[in-house]
Image (cartoon, rainbow, N blue to C red; front, top):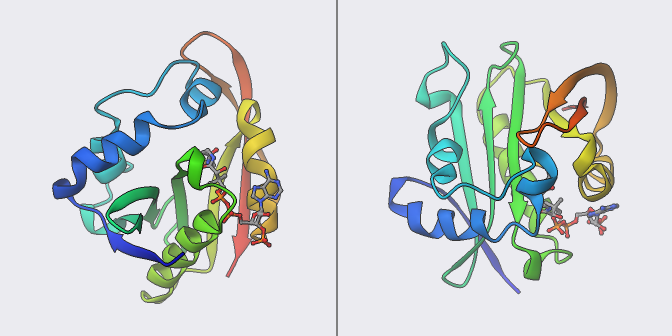
Length: 167
Ligand SMILES: CC(C)(COP(=O)(O)OP(=O)(O)OC[C@H]1O[C@@H](n2cnc3c(N)ncnc32)[C@H](O)[C@@H]1OP(=O)(O)O)[C@@H](O)C(=O)NCCC(=O)NCCS
């Protein structure tokens, strides 16, 4: 199967919303509630205060005309040399075929096209670790000593662990 990667824009809002709604329980595990119908706008535009839209990268993975995966990242957070990965999600019926790795490689290529990025960084919420940790470790990420309390919207208190990859 040949995948195609593209930068996502507001033109892809409908396809992105469909993908986010088909999350295999990701939102429940991380936020303690189902995915929100307007979450796609955040995936396209949300970023930390002080960083411009040009710091944000959102890429999609297409299988023929179907959007099957998304990844977003912010360049320069929390330090100038860091690329912070937000969401990386593949629809359940396309998992295990290399889609997640392909999305990460595409993020990597974009980060390397701007000088100065030395580190990829992300957080793994403990209630999603059974799904996510093995994947990120397989891609080379290692846990840092940083962790913070994570309170889900259903009140469950858990932990977000920070992982990094030196590039
Ligand atoms: C995590 C996720 C993105 C992985 O996507 P995927 O398309 O199934 O992953 P890939 O097929 O590209 O796997 C890449 C590698 O990771 C390995 N891998 C994937 N999940 C793994 C796991 N849970 N444990 C161990 N290894 C894992 C694969 O075996 C593969 O190894 P290889 O390339 O050396 O053969 C997908 O499960 C998903 O969308 N989950 C829900 C959202 C989520 O939790 N995202 C992460 C937090 S933001």
